[in-house]
Image: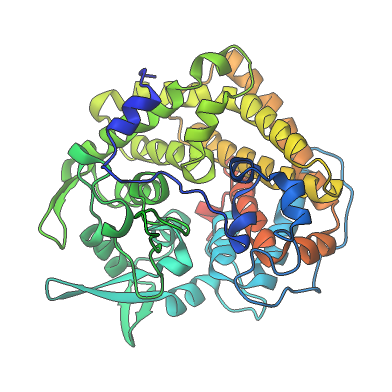
Length: 459
């Protein structure tokens, strides 16, 4: 990994850009967890006592569901039981919540044939209810609403990896399109300048009519959640989708705004940015130490501890991209991932132990397990994807770290299955449950990739 200081990273930012604003809104609290609350100076216990955590907190709708919860089940922490636990929780709650984020992650973890509670296709439902049209320079483009998919191109890349047919109907504005049209529109609407990687951050990046950009206070600073940041919030899904759609020999195109997009340059520049973040904790974690705060603060600006970015560069490598010494850089990146299985997990345990003092232990455990399953699920999705496609050979020492992480992964999944989900749902709300489902989608897929149940190959 190349060395790069946090100060240098800030210098490269567009003036006025914000990585991840402090969110002090009550409704937003449980999206984020201990790190942000600590920054706000309250802690989990203080937030709980202040009423930030409780019935309705973090829920998109006013009502909190009370029923249709799985009964706690104790299982031995081995592979088969962990997979059983992940599948049962994922499939039950994705159907019960029936929101687009939960459903797309059920497709991620169970495959393109996942069914809703009424027996209909989840893919058909997502493609008929959550697409929209956008006109740029006189031409209409179809895309999936930001309010549904959260991350730009996340529906598209999930459908592509799951093997959904390219003639899959996509309905928007009363018009019928196909997944091919959505793919072409994804390319057309994509904006990124490798010479100024943060150029299209914040409000300059595409918003649709269903999503409200952040409001600004008198000082010109955002006061609500920032969802416009390309590098941290959206780029990994685009890299996955475009690396699947475009061979390296045909990886340059002109977007709807008349800008030339060269995918190899985007890969190189964004990876350099990511490597700079990794360098902030590389030495400590390679020594077996807990992930240092400076690294954790930066890596948490990326979605899901930056592990979507890891997967995106593996996808580029798998689909033939070798520009700018990509293969060796990915190997170094993956070496750090094997250390993070321990270092990041210890940091999570430490954060929640400190921030949860004075809060009911079972709720602290719920937050902790959610974070750990998210960490392990995303990390092993990348590791097993690399193994499946023979993208690198793991050394004996790397394999030892992987095996130790696997056992912790299984233990946390079966522990989550043994919890009182009715209590969690009543106390923390449907948004908290939905966030667990998101983590479970990646966890289930991670465990299936090296088995005959690989969801990408399900007929």
